[in-house]
Image (cartoon, rainbow, N blue to C red; front, side):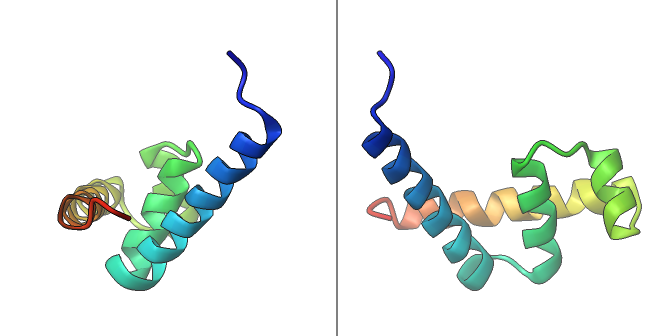
Length: 79
């Protein structure tokens, strides 16, 4: 079953809302940049290149970001 355009738009709006909340309330600036680039499909190596950091920094940052986001949504399931 293909979702209707309204369902697709609602899903996109929820995604934008989640990303805004993640950016403004949950993650540091670096964590958000890494998280967002990962969401959009960039590899660890490419994220490191874009942000001029090492792959190890990206990996550590991804770990922290995922942990914070997971914790937030576990504590706020209504969001």
